[in-house]
Amino acid sequence: MTGIYLAAAFSIGGLLFFNRSRLINYLLVIAFLVLQTGFTFYEYLHPNTTELGYFTADALSILMLATLSIISIPAMYHSYVFLTKEKENPAHRAIYFAAMVVLLTAISAAYLANHIAVTWIFVELTTLSASALIYHRRNNRTLEGTWKYVFVCAISITLVFIGILFLSFTLKKAGTDDLSFAVLLKKAPELNLFWLRLAFIFIFTGFTAKLGLVPMYTAGIDAKDKAPSPAGAILSSVLMNMGFVGIFRFYVIIANSPLHAWANHVIMIAAILSIFVATVYMTKVKNIKRMFAYSSIEHMGIVMLGVVAGGVGYYAAILHIIFHAFVKSSLFFQMGQIYRIYKTKSIYYVGNYFKYNLTGAIVVLLGFFCATAMPPSGLFISEFLIFRALFEANYLAVLIVVMMLLTIIIWAFGKNIFKLLFSPPIDFKEDDLEKIKPVESISQFILFGLVVYLGLNPPQEFVTLIHEAIKNLPK
Image 1 (tube, helix red, strand yellow):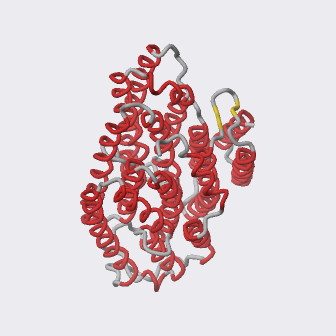
Image 2: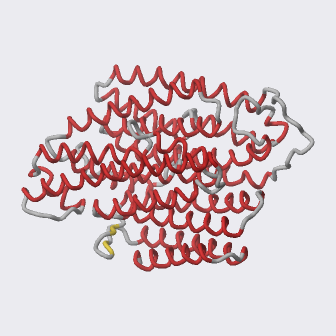
Image 3: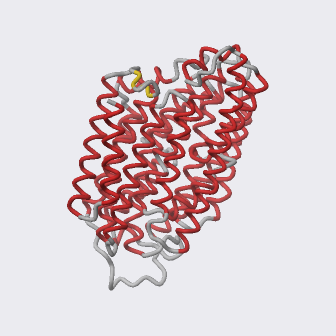
């Protein structure tokens, strides 16, 4: 089925690229969404089945695949709205949808890849397809954002490649050359620690570009800002999840080797620095999309702290990254409406959003509560569990520092959100105000509802999948 999915999805991407008919473009997009949803259900019903030798639907990939499929439907809908509101160019529309389909397919394949070199190939493909989306508006700013993204991602993918090379050295000494995650896990206690340490540093650093973590988080900030809002939603959610999957699969191997404690120190430094960087920028940033992007860096830092803390932190980290994907994609979908009303992303000029778009303002307010992990948001549950895990692992000093930084982030986030909602806008002309249909906000309410429901009352199947995903980590 994986082979059929990849062949069909890439064929749809190719047809979208060469076709200029509006109707056929949208029919192809609908066909892709049906294919993506059907494939996700198939993988859920056939867990731990390996196909084509390199793709296995384990619990982690099923969870991430389901998250992607849920978000991809509103992403395509909001893309349709976005493209119909701007002066539509058939060639640009075709390239946009082709890039979206290839990006979502490559991310899905990276989730399922059971071999680190195969993961690497599809991660590289996400860089190329994401670049086409970032450059969609074809002006100097998007060109700058695109080349920065390509440049940083090229360095990151090279680092991962070097890490894989070091990994092959250590595997040869263990008597095998199989780079599948299953073999790496089995051979973990026998691997040469010197080469394994080097491999982890390079692979971890490389994947931070996709995850949005220090040191290579910069790749995503400009990309999310310059890309159209529906594409920014994908870059801020399921693409970051792909970076997490890449790091998490290798972390499971390291956790079963004598380097577990050392790797935890490396990840903890990166996580704390990420939250610190997010705090500094969120107190200064005036661009709403960049504020959402820096908020994602903060959340990725919290996720990795959960991984480091261990215990219930493993469970909470998976929970947190799924909830974050739903919340952050919703805020980016809403950002498209904000931009259509004010024609600016600057927090300085916007205001009175309740007056101009009531349903959109409610979405922004709910998004603020969810993103800052206030009850009843599911992120409150996952953050609470991560903090509990840090306390139980005797990381009390880290916990105090992180809570202080998060307090500053909530203040900075809240200050800008309440400016958008209640303060009068500056130099704003109501004459050419665009009326936003309430139906355009339905997808965001559904995603927030999912975050609350899965946090307060998670189905047993969902809980079982998360426990299955972390079963190979030390207790």
